[in-house]
Image (tube, rainbow, N blue to C red; front, side, top):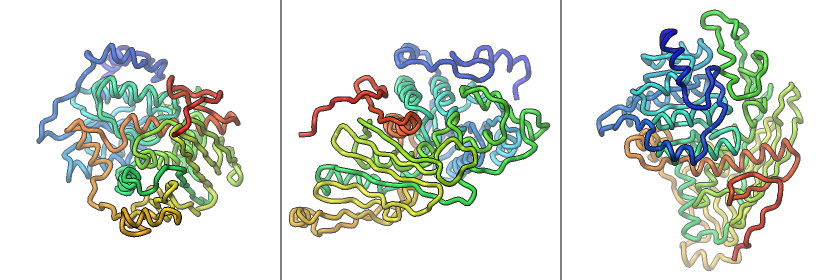
Length: 451
């Protein structure tokens, strides 16, 4: 940990737009980041045999799990070490340092980003901190693995993607299912013409929890007045969100509150919308998004609904229909419908689960054409079980500078659909996306019909 003098000096010199309290006041525009591109730190130049140095920021249950995954991957297939850890809850911080044996631990993410020996950061904070930390890291020359959702809002996702492009950093958004082979097999099948014109994609994400999803265990002694391991830096945790007195409920169960999360949409639907963008052959912004639902069962003071539905239309002439409830566990099969056929990717409906094969089935009217081209009216395409994991993919790309499985442009387009659904629900209106200006509006957008 830095001493008081060096820490104070560091905070004074921290990234532009960030106050000593950790609040992001402004995120640079694309033009601004382009101007400073040539003077940004470029990070270490990694040789083929160099181990990648990682800093982990946000070490709750998910963050600790991802950190362990990085350590295991670093010790097996992609040489890497966790050398720094950061969390605002001292108990979690100390636990992470014990597990990782990292030489540096801090409660201030900026101290991790400032270290010249760190090549990449893993961000697993609450959603409202994803964009500020990722953008600061990229501007400091670090590559970024950021847990889903990419950001909390559409505007933040736009800025995230702009900075990634301007700084030429490797970005992987942590919807790990996008590294599974079924989506890439479906993408190839669609490109090969197995289903004809794309019409509709469907999916779901259902759970049934007795106490309601996201009611994580609360550590009763933890808080800003806690001593030793019980101390939480609440002001830093709140950061750019609305200022409120300390609430253990909000800290430990943040996904239930709009200040920090979009609930089902940002936590779960991202695992559906991101892989579908891969299947479609190119990531796409939506044209129109609408959402509905409500809190039907878990009336425990949560702000986000326990049941949520999303419908989106895309300029290329197809739609997306998603369903979810935290009070019923029965999924809807994940599939893509075309005019000439259908691709079934996940018959069990669990988008995070791997499958042995996907199935392409001809529509009756096009059966003869399908059989002549593909040999049978139903074709099973086996998936590759040896495909590299999401973490392996990220660490390899840090070395090679290739595009990751879920890179910033793709993740931004998925986040646009997700973020618009949240706002549609909250505002009670249909929203549209002006792709030319990359902004959300409530006024219909005219697009040329598909030929």
